[in-house]
Image 1 (cartoon, rainbow, N blue to C red):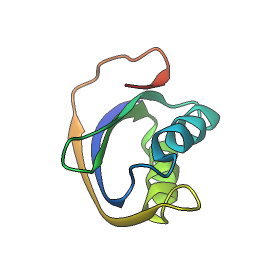
Image 2: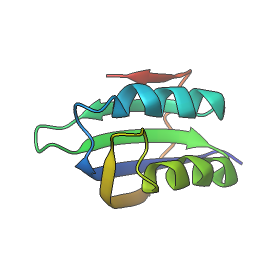
Image 3: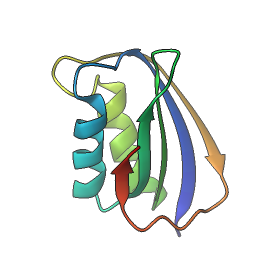
Image 4: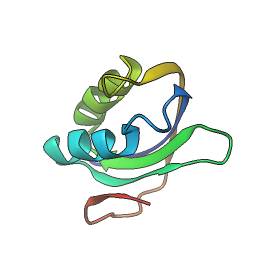
Length: 90
């Protein structure tokens, strides 16, 4: 079963290749969706995939993501399926 998640990541997540690293990790896990920087300094992503696989991405994010990133908070909520084709940077 595929589910949709909306995730907001707060911390030092802009200017540290967070979006590129997240795209690589999501693609490696065969997840679909997108990631983008937000004006408030956070990173927002929407991701679709099997819940157990999405949990792997969330775990990677929660541990700080890329080497120079720092994650202070991760907000997660479920959403309706969008049927994304791939995982992209917006």
